[in-house]
Picture 1 (tube, rainbow, N blue to C red):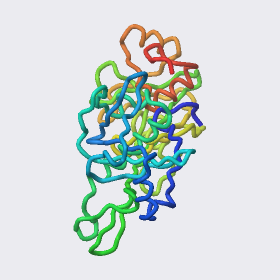
Picture 2 (picture 1 turned 60 degrees about the vertical axis):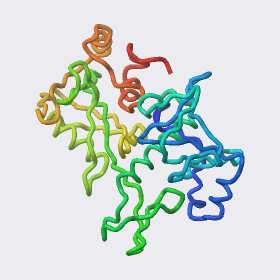
Picture 3 (picture 1 turned 180 degrees about the vertical axis):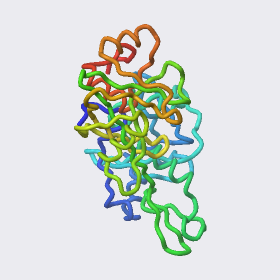
Length: 299
């Protein structure tokens, strides 16, 4: 697996077996050691003294709102988030996952990622897909139940493959989507279709987007991408022989092969901006490149 993925660093026990134990959840909430933080529209409060960290408040001082149990640490301390308006707090700033997800420590990054994913799902799925009636939060924030028909709904997750393609000369393929800025380049990606394996999705997406046939599809690692609800699954693959790039204009504005020296020069000259360190794309490219790219901060 990849050595470091910004949004795949959670360290807590998610205690899934405790979520439907209402007595245990209430006891955990009332424990003075319990730590909580507030989330609103994918943002939370962050302190930068001495370094980026979530701002926790005691449970008895938390605002009213939906509560999500996120897990328990090695010392038995429970962690919750509350969906509510962010309070004003001296020394704290509001921040989203894109801004601080890669900067937070392992535990805080995992907690924030988990909270963002749950909040988005709850906000966008308040009604039963069977009868259209309102649903209720159960299982400490991990299930929505319909009181009318008894059905339960679980958070949706969209699997997507993201793949670094190399050719026989060990060049990397980078491309730009039609809506991207002129200097942005990244590797290819796409959603997995029904009845399709991950490896099949890699081959299909590459062929659809740039007209290449790939082999040697190898799994590298995965990370959640709750912006809004994906799981990004990273692969290496190889395009053998002298194949012509045929970008699909609806998906890819341009695509080209780069050696390491060519990519280094393009980034240093400002012609290309690499993917941010929050993305699995950056980690895949770094594995091929041999280290951080010229425009990446050290981690």
